[in-house]
Image (cartoon, rainbow, N blue to C red; front, side):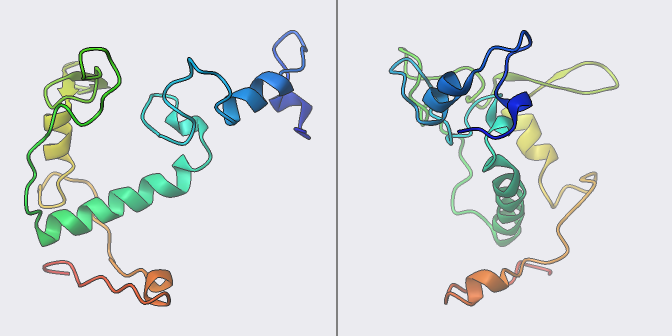
Length: 147
């Protein structure tokens, strides 16, 4: 049961509890991606997105500062469409993110380069790469290069 009526009602006041429950439980064979996959533009609607997104961003910074073994972009790792690829997941796909100065639509490759913590124009880099909650569980991360 959803306690907050405003979150479970349509604009005309219809109760959407059953539809929401089906959505949250992936109770629709045509539903893709599955809730929790964080693979679509609706990812931000999944409550796990908000704690997970900055954690993954921070881990990516840590990994890039320590060096990847291979940063090759594999255009065929996400098998959603019939042809084996899904728009927006390939290296050179133009995304919805644009340069505010000229409206240029960035590709995944361009965004990946812009978000590199070694990029001097990157507006932020995490100040620490310590995860005490992981260390308490016996998982130890080695320091990032130069940190």
